[in-house]
Length: 242
Image (cartoon, rainbow, N blue to C red; front, side):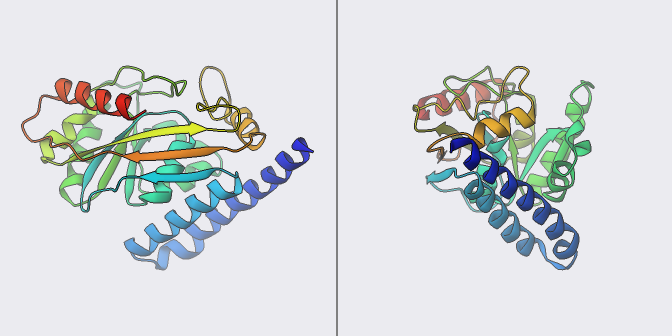
């Protein structure tokens, strides 16, 4: 019975992904920025619903631009944040652009892409982020640089925080926690090691009572901050919230 339910969820996932492609092809060209954000928020919330993942929001995102800094558990992190804050432009590794179906969806959300293999590319992205923040956008990063097991944080990398310092923008810490019927830390959502996106998706659709809590912490000022000290402070705040 559980396998049949998982297969049904998979069918709905495929339909919803294809619907997303239709939205960006047929609707995005004639929508303004606010209209696109509404569609991103609806699509993301619906995707969580299709996966039977309950969403819980704690706290409130500040108005205007901010650098959103979150812990990284799964590819679902972006979906969860977009479901409550669709204005966020995430920084993602460049090879995501080539992924079937997912690539066009991510690109349509005004994602900023970084080539991690090129060390100097981080500086280019920092400049892009600073320009976006100064233009009033919100930018999202995962300073751990990769996904963790969900029970503790990996060390934060400070490089991309320079964008908030340069733009004198506020930093909004966000703590993400996935739980399920089997425990306070969902093992079904954890996306680490050699797990493929297909394997991860199957574990999620097989899950029971999945829930994601998006805890939005008070903003932190970045003006004249030291990026390493700021990084440490943000890590401590998110760890405490988890």
